[in-house]
Image (tube, rainbow, N blue to C red; front, side, top):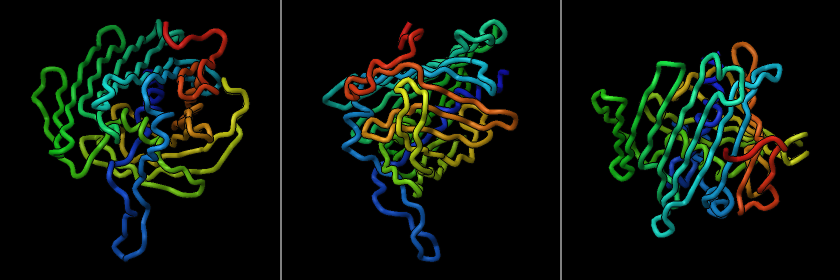
Length: 288
């Protein structure tokens, strides 16, 4: 079950974003046009990434067994410098795993600029009854350098070309890409201690029923990931976004080697999307 919960956390961690400034399609060696890099759509920033958005998910294993919850919150810290903070909390709260193997992980990412790039990331992990870990990463975007520290181990240094997201800033930025059913785009990110190009496929439109927004029209998006990332991950992951300017990720599903995991949105707040803000199942609240 420990591995199953790691996978559930990975739903949101693994959904990636593109490098800023890539405004032309990549070209293959034979001269044919290849898959283009995804680009942020500036008009979507007001809705998806202006600060003040809160999301809460319940995570279920096959058969409807709840194994934990995920909470996301983005706040704006400075208007003049466009500084933001993403808080991501994953826990076994209100599930049977809480007594067997409690998990409480907090991830904080600091973001800056119009492309919402990370410059600082910190994570605290409390898992089981005796495991704790602390990680800290600094991103020097202009220099193309990453400095990684885990607990009291020596600092590890990495380099990259262009700009890059971490696995959390990428989740938000990916919502701002151009979604055209039947097309794909590339989203470079830093994972497994290297820069990875990930292909994201925009599948089709689908009416998703019985959500907190009732029946809602969505766009189905599937990233093809070839790395582990912070948490172990196997199988395909699919995200259902509302088919409008808010791009609310209503449901996320990942196939496992045995069974599947589904993260369902159970509470949502965002003053810039009043048609959805305040929606929640009766027994839930965004924050305790």
